[in-house]
Image (cartoon, rainbow, N blue to C red):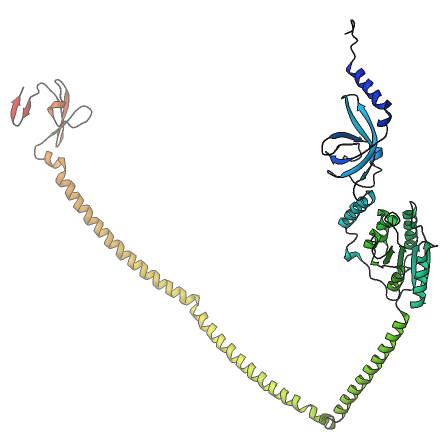
Amino acid sequence: MADNPVYLSVSDLNFYISQKFKNDPYLHKVFLQGELSNFRFRMHSHQYFSLKDDKSKINVVMFRSFFEKLKFKPEEGMKVYVSGYVDVYGPQGSYQFYAQTMEPAGLGALYEQLRQLQEKLEKEGLFNEDHKKRLPLFPDRIAVVTSASGAVIHDIMVTANRRFPHAEIDLYPAKVQGDEAADTIVASLKQIQAQGDKYDVVIIGRGGGSLEDLWPFNEEKVVRQIYAMQMPVISSVGHETDTTLADLVADARAATPTAAAEYATPNLADVLTKIVQLRARLYAAMQANIRAKRQILDRLRNAPVLQEPTRIYDQQIQQVDMLTHRLNQAMSNQLQHDRSGVRLLQERLKALNPGRRLEQLERERTFIVANLFSTMTTYLKDQRNKLNRTMQQLDDISPLKTISRGYVYTTDQEGNTVTSVDKLEIDEKLKLHFKDGQVQVNVENIRREKDGNQEK
């Protein structure tokens, strides 16, 4: 061990390790495959997640500038291929993988991108049958968006001229393969759209090819432009087994350019044959209608009514007489009913006459007054008898009547009646109440008696 050791700071050690990673040529460009873990999408920001396999896991950073270039949306648990470099994050002293590119594993980036875009547009309703426009039966002008040098335009023109020479076909050349193809296709469609109602139908297509070759017809801007077209669009992209998003959003899909031309135009020979058939059917129908009308005319001409026109009114005259009789009878019945109602109302009015009502109330009042007077007389007589009986009872039990026979009663100074000598004391003043006055006395002697015997 050194006598004077040099102690490094943590930052110095992390910087030293970081330089080791940067100087290692094997870590400058690393290609990894694994499963996304802890992926949480952060809008308009850097993405932080992990990449793992069955045994290990590594932290991954993907800066916003690289993430915005992805043509698919990463999801938790998705297996992906990533490329980038390994470095040390100094503030935490941890090494991590800095991803610069990413693409799905398995089906590949294009298939995954196609699947996600199809799900997105389908949720928005771009593929719903309710938005499909009907193809015109007899188009005057047809616009074709395809390569000027390909066999598609040749097949379409040959088929259209053979079936319906009246239709005018205009080519809007566009690239149908490569990075610039989608922009040229959209530009041609917008140019057609700017013509207003000049064109009755649009055919867009190209020959078969791989997924990469047909990719311009899976671009979102191409699909949205087809959806925005005001006239119906027929898609003829690839072979019958190839299906692009342009096929799904178009109003009709044809397996080949020849089939697209057949969808867009009627077969003139078939149309002429049908016209001849319809003309024959119309002539036959007119002849049958004329015969039927002639038969009706003959029946009317031989009708008895037309032979004797006056008979037309016989039944009506009889009906008028019958209706007049029914009307008179109904009016008579109604008049009789109304008279009965008037008499009934008169009787009810008499019953409700105020004078008769007042006479009845006067008789009731006289009866009530007489009844009240009789009742009051009886009541007063009964009350007078009760009063006499009560006065007699009071007189019988009145102490004054007893006093009138020579008895007196005694009260103390407070006016309380004295009923026993037990309540008296010597020299106490008492009042003796006589029939005609009162006498005040003093108690000088108290003698108690019990059962007639004197007690001390």
